Image (cartoon, rainbow, N blue to C red; front, side, top):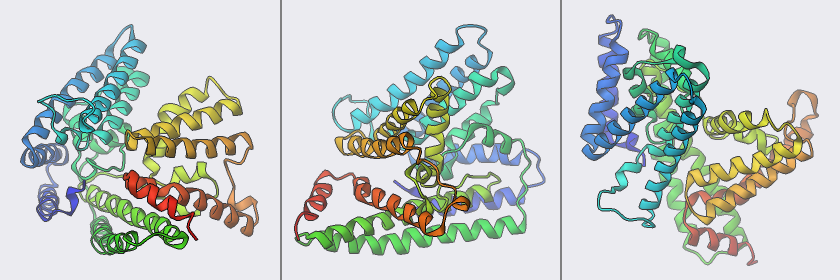
Length: 382
């Protein structure tokens, strides 16, 4: 769900940028005005979401501060905080799927929480490993979790980077302003023009009795569609982040030039891949350094990414599919290809192989099991 295509939301964000530019001589304008903007935006968007987000943030800030200063039992507190957050977002997803029911549940609670919980966990990691020296003010903690440009679809911000940005005064040069505006326009072009037109074509072809060539076309076409859709949102978020004085990380780093699936996930939705690598792979790989352990971790991580996208057998199989391929790369020592140390033809051959692997499963992102099965069945009809 992307509110960044709403004209009122775009006008509000641009208005916030103008206010920041006019008050740039006030040393704390960025931190305080962005806080007020984040809270007012959520309040006007949905009072239920505002209240839920406020309670969620305050509870986690209390846990974060406690973890910063905890003299003992730190590991238990750290683990409990992560488990409770994961259990919370998982429970809400079950309510959203009507597996569980409660009169107080509202689907709006899930709005942005899927990304927010990852940022919360990153903050807990920071508190656990840095301690009291890593304590951040409540104002900056709230801005980190509720930063409007990245609230619903990322890119996923790193706690330490956002806190470092928060300490810097608001300084947006003419060059930064131009780059930010161009990035927003590029994102809007992708979302409003390309994605809208491509979606019409996708559904037109889908309405046919699918043959092999229809299904193959739909897989490739949908792959391009979700790239423009998601990268367009990321462009808008990065552009507004820059105009508001924050550096938002890149989410797409030439993913189509990835010679292995391992490298692909460092370039496609890069901030998500980085999050799982930093918080799961790097932690456990220190204790289990064998290739077999690395292969097993790859499967676990991709299953996690699959379930993060959605609680369904489609995403579970999607995660297993990617995990097995990455495990094979690890076991056969094929996880990394240095472009400078191999021939050009070999490099591009590996890139093509990687894209074929991704394309075969990319239709799962549609989230519609009927559509997915129809397209796969179409591959069998010549």
